[in-house]
Length: 421
Ligand SMILES: *Cc1c(COP(=O)(O)O)cnc(C)c1O
Image: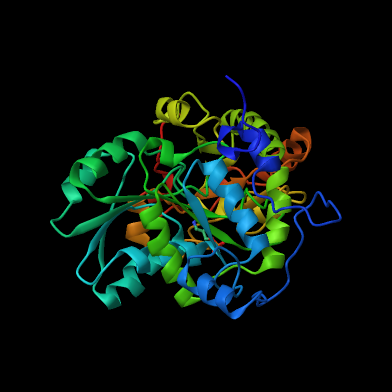
């Protein structure tokens, strides 16, 4: 088969990351996409201005409606996800919000993964309910639960896999079949894997969301979001709403993220190589009670992960013996690894979901979603494996022997294991 170098869809994924998303060279022949830092664009004539507004002529009008630098990033991520086109947004949450605003009406119902990004859950439960949109949350790693939760007014299935922070996996193809059978929109938040490792559109998704803040930008310095649709109709609908609500990305922001995307495959490969080694190390550590990483053979959905992902990524969650107190000890004693939320950057980060990212979710709902008090989330970076390991090891060894710890609660909750090793 001959490669059509002009068509990014014909290229392989490393090449796409480097070449997809570009603009015509100016007279200078620049390699990098320029930053078109302009809020508005000159029309050659009144007739051209009218033709651009009516859509008869392509060309830029005003940056909230479209910008060449932002468009280059949209093309890049759409090519990586294998979709029709992309819509860049100011943040990942703007992408989540615009998908809901564009596609749901009063009275509609969503079935969502119970272990989704904290702010997405708050949006569904506290904000969309004000507009008469209701949601049910189910553990989508058992996809039979989805069909049971469907109502006549269900309009969308919203899935996150791997789940944050339990690292459970949902069978994305199986959910695609359910959505197709019931003619329901199927949206996947792909942030925890990213298009280099997982492409939900190939598995039946209609819409894919990425927080570009994470793996795609990868340098913990810019926020951004992207919606990619499988087809043109959804693209037009969502684009229109994004323009009207003004969730557009800024050209300088787009330029920085595109710069990150060019080296994304190298970062993802390196980080997941570190993560696999660290998961094995943690599994054998006496102070660690359980490890959830899709790459471990003992992970409950290891086989599904292997089937639908090109790699297992670099997010690990684990429980520390002694529960919450021990988790705090680890977080307060790491030196190289930084205590911070977010993920997917070149540096390793550690956080405690129950008291930080997922603290706004009531405890019972948290526990149903597998977010136990003892769970520590680790975003593995691109440092030398031995340095991350040694830092974690010394922090874990700061945990005192179990008998010196405070008594555990009578219900013994903190010792429950969400996954078997
Ligand atoms: C970070 C994140 C978001 C939100 O993205 P922002 O860029 O922070 O707005 C949404 N979903 C998931 C899974 C995330 O990790």
